[in-house]
Amino acid sequence: MSGRPLVSSLPCTRQEAPPDDPIGLNLKEWPRFSFDACPGILGEFVRLATRDSEADPAAVCITALVRFGAEVYGYAPDKGPHLYVGETVHSPRLFAVICGSTSKARKGTSRHPVAKLFGREHCLPADLKIWGVPLPARESGGPLSTGEGLAHHVRDESDEERERRQRQNPAEPVREKGDKRLVIMDEEFASALACTKREGNTLSMGIRCFWDSGDYAPLTKNNPVLVRGAHISIITHITMQELAVCLGEVQAVNGFGNRFLWICARRSKLVALPSRMPDAELAPLQRELWRCVGQAQQRGVMTMTTKALELWRHVYPELSQEHTGLAGSIINRAEAQTLRLALLYALLDAQGKIEEPHLQAALVMWRYAQDSARYIFGDRATDPLEDKILEALKAGPLTATELSTVLSRHVPRDRLKPLLQQLEAQQRITITKLKNAGRPRIILALRELSEKSEISEERRSLA
Image (cartoon, rainbow, N blue to C red):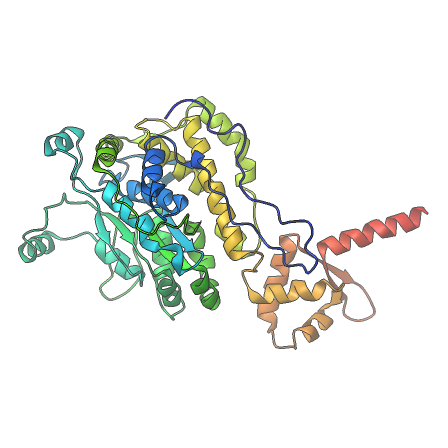
């Protein structure tokens, strides 16, 4: 990767909705993917994989990044590449949901080229030994179902378990003790959303634990599965139609959705009979990739260069903004996701520090994920009741009693009160108490309407 800046300023791919929208559809344009998110060897591969294929470049790019991150792990705490934010450790692992426009988005078109890249048929055993490359990460086709299911595949095996497994699978290569790398290539995220709705299901908790720290230690009485320092990476798929059907389950996404990068994908072009990637072009990319993996696994604590740190301080206020609605809950982990992406770009560039171009590429990739989340979830509220409240207040201020009537008096107080307080804290509504002879009257209003009313009142008083 060259030192030349990839973008001249903070990248932003989101397109504004057209001004003439007479019926208020507020349609959004499909997010635009930039190859500035694919510098160096990554860009060479994405162009090769999509040249004579219907694969979406964004889907290929994120799949390759997640797959690369699955490999670079040091097998022990504080070993292998990682980044400190205060005392919080960020490892190079990512979770991503590829959201296809339709079933024609061709889930496998992004997965199969990446699987080919991470093969080893073009690497000599002697070179792999020199580069210090261990066995590839374990792979699983899913589906995602429970936290215990995830934990089982990366649990701390006893010597007896290892010996028994080796006897039962003599052809399976012997892995180093402590190798807890696992990459999950799942194609049924709709099934995972359905699982999280079941009472007592632990998938949401498991996803949060394995993204955050890699530790999983549920306080259960019988046969607890304890895991320390696991390194799980996840790529999963869903279509827009499946997501629309799963809207009830989507509310569960609030708990773990911001651990995932949400990526819009669609068929890039029509190719009646796609060609295979030529070995002559794939081979040097595969060899360079595994050389980078070997170097990355020898890294320790990664830091930013002075220029990268300057850029980070410049973009941090925007990245750390709080966003509302369901899309907001999905993109409210922008700082951490961007740093992990920057760490991966540095390792793919075989560098020991995060440089400015690595952070710029990470920002471009994050912007695409952010715009994808906004396109996928739109203005939908995290709670359907929130939408009803805001819609009712568009007509004008209401008393608490009037709002309850609009909601058919079916909403219990212990659910309505915290939601109204949350909307006020987010500065989306105002709550005013008017004193009178008895109980004070509570007036609820949309903040923007309340501010306009105050401005009008000031003008009248000055006239």
